[in-house]
Image (cartoon, rainbow, N blue to C red; front, side, top):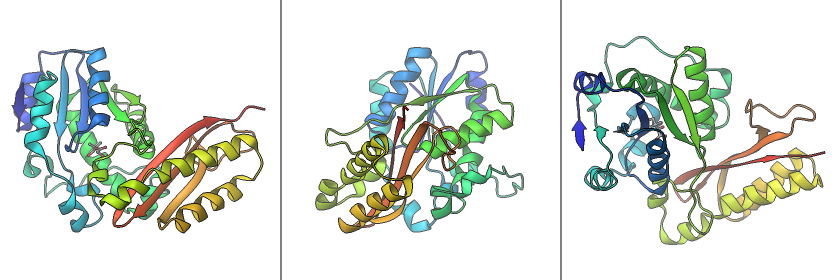
Length: 278
Ligand code: PAF
């Protein structure tokens, strides 16, 4: 396994290769990342995993500092599963203090998580775009847990005419339904037991939407009240079009319920896709 720290070095190493499959991460690797990597290996033997904790996508320095850093364990895990290239750039390599060029994202980047984490998606887009330019992959793999991120990255490559194929991978869950996330390790024992309530609430909202027993806004209110009553602070629980992330228009049937809520001091996100048949 080659561990590369400098952009120019990675560009040189990857230059002769084609069909590169790229998995960008912020480290603290778990089953969700391993699934992305397994999917990448199904498409290519040239898998590149990046590990960069991107300060631009955190809203507060406190949140950035408390992000779990487990580089040694991550590298051991990647070596064990035979990843050939791991890119671990330094902050100075990725962040140019003189950079003035910015990416303006579509309006939906300022809704949902973007509304509660100002600047988050601009930070994601800035780094993902740089990583794409350095790695120049054929395809890049993203998890559906970060549904809005996935949507915006698809928009980024579409609007910039990038040839990179964006591959989405289903959310990997613990047995109790909690979506795998690096943030789960920040939950205390009691909150870890309660954490599956987010997915349970999304699932019962989905059931109600399919049964058409309540309006979407009543279902959203039901979900919010249930989680608030269980001690969560809900940022949003909303039923949207899975194609546009906007509120569904009449008769739209490809839907997603997206949720973000905080338990203790840990903010979790999750979502569930579904179809409504007539
Ligand atoms: O999903 C993540 O881990 C990050 O947002 C990403 C895509 C690696 C960009 O920093």
